[in-house]
Image (cartoon, rainbow, N blue to C red; front, side):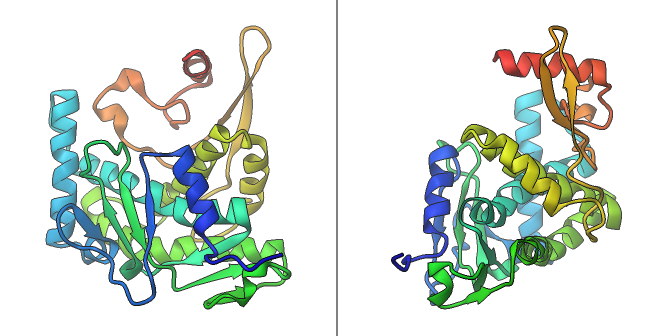
Length: 282
Protein backbone atom coordinates (compact mmCIF):
# COMPACT_ATOMS: atom_id res chain seq x y z
CA UNK A 1 0.00 0.00 0.00
CA UNK A 2 1.27 3.51 -0.77
CA UNK A 3 2.36 5.75 2.09
CA UNK A 4 -0.26 8.48 2.72
CA UNK A 5 0.98 12.06 2.57
CA UNK A 6 -0.91 12.85 5.77
CA UNK A 7 -2.14 10.48 8.44
CA UNK A 8 -5.31 12.52 8.98
CA UNK A 9 -6.18 13.99 5.58
CA UNK A 10 -8.60 11.27 4.45
CA UNK A 11 -10.54 11.28 7.71
CA UNK A 12 -10.82 15.07 7.83
CA UNK A 13 -11.84 15.20 4.17
CA UNK A 14 -14.61 12.70 4.89
CA UNK A 15 -15.67 14.68 7.95
CA UNK A 16 -15.91 17.85 5.84
CA UNK A 17 -18.17 15.99 3.41
CA UNK A 18 -20.42 14.93 6.27
CA UNK A 19 -20.24 18.25 8.13
CA UNK A 20 -19.56 20.99 5.56
CA UNK A 21 -20.10 23.49 8.35
CA UNK A 22 -16.89 22.31 10.05
CA UNK A 23 -13.88 22.58 7.71
CA UNK A 24 -10.52 21.59 9.19
CA UNK A 25 -7.18 23.05 8.08
CA UNK A 26 -4.08 21.02 8.91
CA UNK A 27 -1.07 23.18 9.70
CA UNK A 28 2.52 22.27 8.97
CA UNK A 29 5.05 21.66 11.73
CA UNK A 30 6.37 25.22 11.54
CA UNK A 31 3.01 26.97 11.17
CA UNK A 32 1.43 28.75 14.12
CA UNK A 33 -2.25 28.36 14.89
CA UNK A 34 -4.22 31.51 13.94
CA UNK A 35 -5.17 33.87 16.76
CA UNK A 36 -6.48 36.96 14.97
CA UNK A 37 -9.97 37.94 13.89
CA UNK A 38 -12.53 35.41 15.00
CA UNK A 39 -9.95 32.73 15.84
CA UNK A 40 -9.53 31.64 19.45
CA UNK A 41 -6.71 29.24 20.30
CA UNK A 42 -7.46 26.48 22.79
CA UNK A 43 -4.67 27.64 25.09
CA UNK A 44 -6.36 31.06 25.30
CA UNK A 45 -9.52 29.30 26.49
CA UNK A 46 -7.48 27.26 28.96
CA UNK A 47 -5.97 30.43 30.46
CA UNK A 48 -9.46 31.40 31.60
CA UNK A 49 -9.00 35.15 31.11
CA UNK A 50 -9.90 37.62 28.39
CA UNK A 51 -9.95 34.96 25.68
CA UNK A 52 -12.53 32.92 27.53
CA UNK A 53 -14.52 36.07 28.33
CA UNK A 54 -14.72 36.94 24.64
CA UNK A 55 -15.60 33.37 23.71
CA UNK A 56 -18.50 33.24 26.17
CA UNK A 57 -19.73 36.70 25.15
CA UNK A 58 -20.57 35.14 21.78
CA UNK A 59 -22.73 32.50 23.49
CA UNK A 60 -24.37 35.10 25.70
CA UNK A 61 -25.35 37.19 22.67
CA UNK A 62 -26.49 34.12 20.71
CA UNK A 63 -28.83 33.00 23.50
CA UNK A 64 -30.41 36.43 23.78
CA UNK A 65 -30.77 36.70 19.99
CA UNK A 66 -32.27 33.24 19.46
CA UNK A 67 -34.35 32.90 22.61
CA UNK A 68 -35.23 36.45 23.53
CA UNK A 69 -33.87 36.10 27.06
CA UNK A 70 -30.59 36.10 28.93
CA UNK A 71 -29.19 32.86 30.28
CA UNK A 72 -27.51 32.45 33.64
CA UNK A 73 -23.69 32.81 33.44
CA UNK A 74 -23.18 29.14 34.33
CA UNK A 75 -25.58 28.11 31.57
CA UNK A 76 -23.75 30.30 29.06
CA UNK A 77 -20.47 28.68 30.10
CA UNK A 78 -21.99 25.19 29.68
CA UNK A 79 -23.12 26.08 26.17
CA UNK A 80 -19.68 27.48 25.38
CA UNK A 81 -17.88 24.35 26.54
CA UNK A 82 -20.18 22.16 24.46
CA UNK A 83 -19.64 24.25 21.36
CA UNK A 84 -15.88 23.86 21.66
CA UNK A 85 -15.62 20.31 22.98
CA UNK A 86 -18.01 18.70 20.48
CA UNK A 87 -15.89 19.54 17.38
CA UNK A 88 -12.61 19.21 19.32
CA UNK A 89 -13.42 15.60 20.21
CA UNK A 90 -14.17 14.85 16.55
CA UNK A 91 -10.58 15.81 15.72
CA UNK A 92 -9.56 12.66 17.59
CA UNK A 93 -12.49 10.26 17.33
CA UNK A 94 -13.13 10.56 13.58
CA UNK A 95 -9.57 9.57 12.48
CA UNK A 96 -9.74 6.70 14.97
CA UNK A 97 -13.10 5.51 13.66
CA UNK A 98 -12.36 5.92 9.95
CA UNK A 99 -8.59 5.34 9.67
CA UNK A 100 -7.49 3.71 12.93
CA UNK A 101 -5.18 6.65 13.64
CA UNK A 102 -5.30 8.69 16.84
CA UNK A 103 -3.76 12.18 16.79
CA UNK A 104 -2.53 14.10 19.82
CA UNK A 105 -3.15 17.82 20.21
CA UNK A 106 -1.83 20.10 22.94
CA UNK A 107 -3.99 23.13 23.66
CA UNK A 108 -1.41 25.10 21.67
CA UNK A 109 -2.19 22.95 18.60
CA UNK A 110 -5.84 23.88 17.98
CA UNK A 111 -7.61 27.11 17.06
CA UNK A 112 -11.34 27.54 16.53
CA UNK A 113 -13.34 30.18 14.66
CA UNK A 114 -17.13 30.11 14.87
CA UNK A 115 -17.73 33.62 13.54
CA UNK A 116 -17.94 32.75 9.82
CA UNK A 117 -21.62 33.34 8.88
CA UNK A 118 -22.04 30.44 6.44
CA UNK A 119 -20.46 27.83 8.75
CA UNK A 120 -23.02 26.53 11.22
CA UNK A 121 -20.40 24.93 13.50
CA UNK A 122 -17.19 26.83 12.72
CA UNK A 123 -13.76 26.06 11.37
CA UNK A 124 -10.69 24.52 12.97
CA UNK A 125 -6.99 24.93 12.33
CA UNK A 126 -4.92 22.14 13.85
CA UNK A 127 -1.39 20.81 14.13
CA UNK A 128 -1.04 17.25 15.38
CA UNK A 129 2.24 16.72 17.21
CA UNK A 130 2.01 12.91 16.94
CA UNK A 131 -0.40 10.09 16.21
CA UNK A 132 -0.83 6.45 17.14
CA UNK A 133 -1.60 3.69 14.66
CA UNK A 134 -1.73 -0.09 14.42
CA UNK A 135 0.96 -2.45 13.13
CA UNK A 136 0.91 -2.66 9.35
CA UNK A 137 -0.53 0.82 8.82
CA UNK A 138 1.31 2.49 5.88
CA UNK A 139 1.30 5.73 7.88
CA UNK A 140 3.60 4.18 10.48
CA UNK A 141 6.62 5.52 8.58
CA UNK A 142 5.42 9.13 8.75
CA UNK A 143 6.96 11.63 11.20
CA UNK A 144 5.30 11.53 14.60
CA UNK A 145 3.88 8.01 14.19
CA UNK A 146 3.76 5.68 17.18
CA UNK A 147 2.77 2.07 16.59
CA UNK A 148 0.69 0.48 19.36
CA UNK A 149 0.06 -3.21 19.87
CA UNK A 150 -3.62 -3.69 19.14
CA UNK A 151 -7.14 -2.27 19.08
CA UNK A 152 -7.41 -1.99 22.86
CA UNK A 153 -4.15 -0.08 23.02
CA UNK A 154 -5.49 2.23 20.31
CA UNK A 155 -8.67 2.80 22.33
CA UNK A 156 -6.44 3.76 25.25
CA UNK A 157 -4.78 6.30 22.96
CA UNK A 158 -8.19 7.82 22.17
CA UNK A 159 -9.03 8.19 25.84
CA UNK A 160 -5.63 9.70 26.64
CA UNK A 161 -5.66 12.05 23.63
CA UNK A 162 -9.07 13.50 24.48
CA UNK A 163 -8.12 13.88 28.14
CA UNK A 164 -4.80 15.53 27.28
CA UNK A 165 -6.51 18.14 25.16
CA UNK A 166 -9.63 18.77 27.23
CA UNK A 167 -8.26 18.69 30.79
CA UNK A 168 -6.87 22.28 30.81
CA UNK A 169 -9.95 23.53 28.96
CA UNK A 170 -12.27 21.91 31.51
CA UNK A 171 -10.23 23.44 34.34
CA UNK A 172 -10.84 26.92 32.91
CA UNK A 173 -14.54 26.44 32.17
CA UNK A 174 -15.32 24.69 35.44
CA UNK A 175 -15.54 27.74 37.75
CA UNK A 176 -17.70 29.56 35.18
CA UNK A 177 -20.02 26.56 34.98
CA UNK A 178 -20.03 26.02 38.75
CA UNK A 179 -19.02 22.40 38.13
CA UNK A 180 -16.03 20.34 39.13
CA UNK A 181 -14.38 16.96 38.55
CA UNK A 182 -17.00 14.32 37.86
CA UNK A 183 -19.57 16.74 36.42
CA UNK A 184 -17.05 18.18 33.97
CA UNK A 185 -15.82 14.78 32.86
CA UNK A 186 -19.41 13.69 32.46
CA UNK A 187 -19.75 16.43 29.87
CA UNK A 188 -16.54 15.30 28.18
CA UNK A 189 -17.87 11.73 28.06
CA UNK A 190 -21.04 12.92 26.36
CA UNK A 191 -19.14 14.98 23.79
CA UNK A 192 -16.98 11.99 22.83
CA UNK A 193 -19.97 9.69 22.40
CA UNK A 194 -22.57 11.95 20.86
CA UNK A 195 -20.26 13.65 18.39
CA UNK A 196 -19.03 10.43 16.82
CA UNK A 197 -22.47 8.80 17.03
CA UNK A 198 -23.93 11.71 15.06
CA UNK A 199 -21.25 11.59 12.36
CA UNK A 200 -21.58 7.80 12.08
CA UNK A 201 -25.35 8.07 11.66
CA UNK A 202 -24.92 10.47 8.74
CA UNK A 203 -22.52 8.10 6.95
CA UNK A 204 -24.64 5.03 7.68
CA UNK A 205 -22.36 3.43 10.27
CA UNK A 206 -24.29 4.13 13.46
CA UNK A 207 -24.33 0.50 14.58
CA UNK A 208 -20.57 0.13 14.17
CA UNK A 209 -20.04 3.40 16.04
CA UNK A 210 -22.24 2.14 18.84
CA UNK A 211 -20.16 -1.03 19.19
CA UNK A 212 -16.89 0.90 19.00
CA UNK A 213 -17.99 3.46 21.58
CA UNK A 214 -19.16 0.77 23.99
CA UNK A 215 -15.67 -0.71 23.83
CA UNK A 216 -14.06 2.72 24.13
CA UNK A 217 -16.08 3.69 27.21
CA UNK A 218 -17.17 0.49 28.97
CA UNK A 219 -17.76 2.26 32.28
CA UNK A 220 -14.50 2.10 34.26
CA UNK A 221 -12.20 4.40 32.31
CA UNK A 222 -11.36 7.38 34.50
CA UNK A 223 -11.45 10.32 34.22
CA UNK A 224 -14.51 9.61 32.04
CA UNK A 225 -17.83 9.11 33.77
CA UNK A 226 -19.93 6.04 33.13
CA UNK A 227 -20.20 4.09 29.91
CA UNK A 228 -21.34 4.97 26.39
CA UNK A 229 -24.79 4.17 27.88
CA UNK A 230 -26.63 3.14 24.73
CA UNK A 231 -30.00 1.45 25.03
CA UNK A 232 -33.09 0.88 22.92
CA UNK A 233 -36.68 1.97 23.40
CA UNK A 234 -39.70 0.67 21.52
CA UNK A 235 -42.08 2.85 19.53
CA UNK A 236 -45.87 2.45 19.37
CA UNK A 237 -45.62 0.19 16.29
CA UNK A 238 -42.88 -1.92 17.83
CA UNK A 239 -40.12 -0.05 16.04
CA UNK A 240 -36.70 0.11 17.75
CA UNK A 241 -35.63 3.58 18.85
CA UNK A 242 -31.93 3.83 19.76
CA UNK A 243 -31.05 6.27 22.51
CA UNK A 244 -28.51 6.75 25.28
CA UNK A 245 -28.40 8.15 28.79
CA UNK A 246 -26.28 11.26 29.03
CA UNK A 247 -23.86 11.51 31.92
CA UNK A 248 -24.47 15.26 32.18
CA UNK A 249 -27.04 17.93 31.46
CA UNK A 250 -26.37 20.70 28.93
CA UNK A 251 -28.76 23.05 30.83
CA UNK A 252 -30.87 23.85 27.77
CA UNK A 253 -33.97 23.16 29.85
CA UNK A 254 -33.31 26.43 31.71
CA UNK A 255 -34.26 28.27 28.52
CA UNK A 256 -37.04 25.98 27.30
CA UNK A 257 -38.19 23.24 29.69
CA UNK A 258 -40.49 21.77 27.04
CA UNK A 259 -37.68 21.23 24.53
CA UNK A 260 -35.12 19.18 26.44
CA UNK A 261 -32.87 16.82 24.47
CA UNK A 262 -34.06 13.27 23.82
CA UNK A 263 -31.02 11.97 25.72
CA UNK A 264 -31.32 14.44 28.62
CA UNK A 265 -31.26 12.83 32.09
CA UNK A 266 -34.38 14.87 32.84
CA UNK A 267 -36.39 13.34 29.95
CA UNK A 268 -38.51 10.29 30.84
CA UNK A 269 -38.76 7.36 28.44
CA UNK A 270 -42.30 8.21 27.32
CA UNK A 271 -41.18 11.71 26.31
CA UNK A 272 -38.06 10.26 24.70
CA UNK A 273 -40.19 8.08 22.45
CA UNK A 274 -42.20 11.11 21.31
CA UNK A 275 -39.06 13.12 20.64
CA UNK A 276 -37.30 10.28 18.83
CA UNK A 277 -40.31 9.65 16.59
CA UNK A 278 -40.47 13.35 15.76
CA UNK A 279 -36.74 13.39 14.92
CA UNK A 280 -37.17 10.34 12.67
CA UNK A 281 -40.11 11.94 10.88
CA UNK A 282 -38.13 15.12 10.17
